[in-house]
Image (cartoon, rainbow, N blue to C red; front, side, top):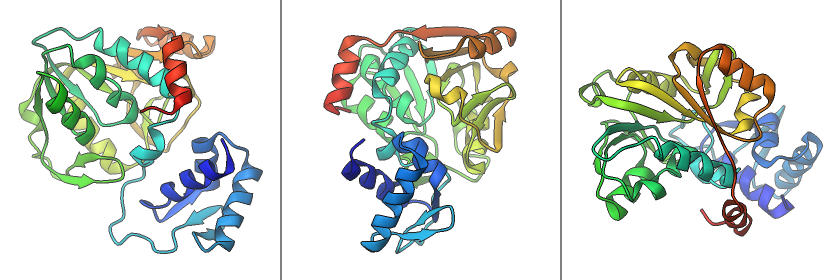
Length: 270
């Protein structure tokens, strides 16, 4: 990633959070810790952010503090080819007339393109997913009640009654912060609360996770491996991680990233 692109990602990342750590920015950009520290120092001198111990913060922090999750705009272009392949495999599991839940995220967002050929009932807390399906498909779209978190483009409610408990689905499709032996991990309590409510409304939980998510970790556990029915990932998954899922009796679908996906990824199309 070029310096100008790294700087854009860094500045975007700090817009919705009080502080972003060096480790977070290393993951976001795929750069070394030393490179990120130099970028932070440069942007600090340019008065575009404030350097703090272990990371950076905004010069003018937002009055409304968002959730602990990367902005949609930052995540959208990361491992895009893998996300497209994973999303296609997810939609292959859907049949016309089925009721499904799709949680907000940049991997699940890629489901909208193949879903235009389907006619499903879709419950989603994602604004971009709902908007695309309303404009370009015949799917029925339902949204929960709650507050809009602009950076992540999702709707979340701190209250028990947001409408989700009245929707039943055959499958729920969701991404995650990390996936390990203890289960699915997320980075914010409000996300965990919302996602646990949605998980309870579906028979099967299908996790869309590119192979890097098996190495990612968070302090918040969303659900145990025993709750997951299927994991869809890319062919970068290690034998060790595949064995972990097999031992937990989880169905594993490994996708192959096509030439078209790689080509679109290089051109930066979303």
